[in-house]
Amino acid sequence: MKKNKKVIAVVVTYNRLELLKQCIEALRKQSHPLEGILVVNNGSTDGTSEWLAEQKDIYAVHQENLGGAGGFYTGFAEALKQNVDWVWAMDDDCIAHPEALQALVQQADDPNNIYCSVAVDAQKPEQLCWITKDIDGRKIKDVKQLGEQPIEVSGVPFLAIFLSTVLIKRIGFPIKEFFIWGDDTEYCWRSRKKANSRVFYIPQSRVYHPPTEYVPIHLLPFIPPILLVKAAPWKLYYSFRNNTFTNRLYSPPFKYYFFYLPKTIAKLWLSRKHIFKDASKQHLKKMFKAIYAGHRGKLGKVDYERL
Image (cartoon, rainbow, N blue to C red; front, side, top):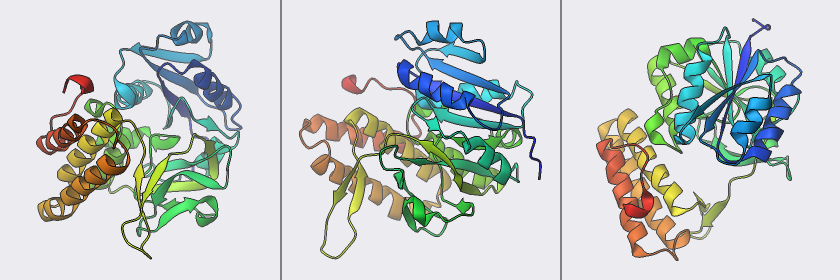
């Protein structure tokens, strides 16, 4: 197992300078040295460009706001130009524990697989920042459920994700037209389809991140609630669109039309009733447009207010 992996950190940022500073400082303190830090600045207007220009150990790429997906597309492409073996990619609100990278380097023994740090709530470090599922479909909410060994999961976010340049060259870059949300899900699906990759969380590798806010929906007594992510309608637009696109792209037609598509529509109805219930009916129409756009493969950044 190669322990002297050359690693570059890729950070995507947009108008969160103070968080970016914390993220970079944590990267500088890693016990396993980084070959470099690459920051993709998505057109920030809060002084980020000026601050980056003062940093001698950061390679910065500036572009218009292409969202997280466009940021990671650029970050992965730029990382391949560097003489490194692995890419550690994250958003600017990710604060890595000093030993986080070391644990990844020790456990990542197959360049064909994807590995990821575990994101925990800084205020409640025993809790994961979002619910995930292992490869058998078991929901994982707490750190204690992870155990001590690498745990294979259905997918991981672009938040302290650790993947080899070999794999990136093999399967390509994230779909920048997603703009935000779902680009990481598609990438994990693609890695399995094209490279037979496996996806693992590494329990010993921890990062701190704001927790996801869920809205529990109790439909029937004695049945676990359905958990919906609470977010602004314009963000949910991308979620519905991009997930529909991914499900259609990688699922057998029968499963897509009789499971994933009805499930997506059901979640839309529940979201309208419980998350953006105070919004106008026009929002519901826009969400249906999102599903239709994903079904037809029409991606890209949208002007949500003018849809």
